Length: 540
Image (cartoon, rainbow, N blue to C red; front, side, top):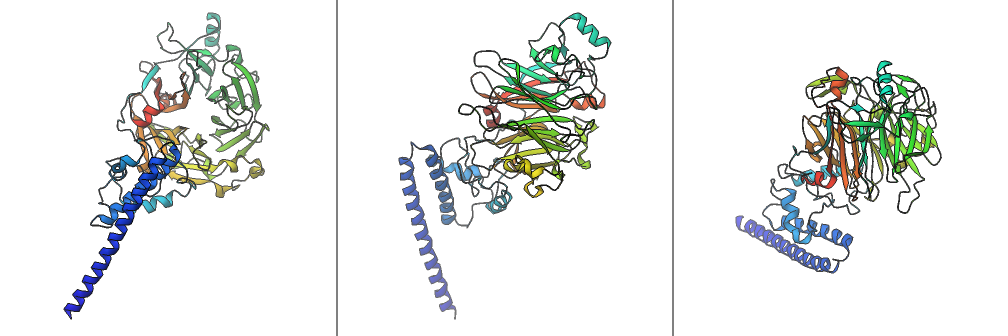
């Protein structure tokens, strides 16, 4: 009885080995053909990348066939798997095939059994693996990298047209140096001139003599940062009495057409002295080119606070005329998104459960100090063009840990939101994932990396939108518990040579709102770093 059984097992083993040997030969032939094809396609980088991806995939299968086990060893990392075929891959490129390109560090090995789970979590990225991805590679390893400090200050120094006007503003309360908080920053670098830095100082109450300023060279005073009103002092002097001026600017955005989009909340404290408005300036001439006052149907008078603006130019240069644009606005205190269609001069309000805060995240703790803030939508970012992905609007509330998204074609259609209804198009809104902690403003890189300022750790954190929004796919770009306390302003802007730079304004807002300001310490910082350096982990 034993002999036939052994013979059967031997024949089965022999047959199986013959099959395996055939498969191995097939793999070798395919790899050989693909290498030959790869050489012929060297002049076409897009085709070469696709072939290289497939070669890496075949190589992985080849490894699994000839190894003793059916899968790679549990400790085998993606670096060891993919970069062992560097001769077949373009060096320094990040490939997005769901099976083998999930990006991890060498300290965070991933077993192959996890890939199928990850593929399911990427359902919100319908075209994630179908088109090539711009080159950006390794995650940074130095989380405590020092960003370049452009300016820092214990307090802000506001310039005035005259000393008489300074004394007048101090005497009637329009200027209170102890009650100012810079919030946002943006930079403009003409090709033949010096970089211009802009800062916003909203009027949470009386205190700032003007709420949009251009940074001058450090002045003769002790503060280290000297400001001048933008576009000039006359736009701010009325303190909300003249609605043709600027009342309270929270954030700005300089677009690809060299225009500054100014979001004016129209309020002093909690009172709307003017309707909220969008004012657009040609940054090269400092002249207003567009103004839109929001109608009462999209904001709640004396309650709404419009704090963030993101802009999507649908006909950008060099081929476009910069006439078509959508602006997305965060209404933090009445919990909504506002969409503005520039070409039709129309706006509408979007409100649902994704635009609301959560009581569980209403306590913000930064560097050991806590304060209460129950704000809705805070950070807004947009999928860049050219990634082969469905374009989405990514947004989150500062008092919530949910990262949400909605397709642009849905939210850009005003007819979807004609009737104020919190269930309007709700099925198109997606919970991308959760952080477990709050983050402040966000900014999207052209390569599809979403940046956001985290509270724990106190850091600038990135996420590749082609991957699932989980802890293993979020990576720390810069971490510093002293210099990055409350990132209020975050922008990506080109310098004079066209190289993209990340600009950050940190303001220690927790001390401002809890009343523990110490003007013997540095409270405000403007920092920057090259985008490539930041993403690649190189010195700024």
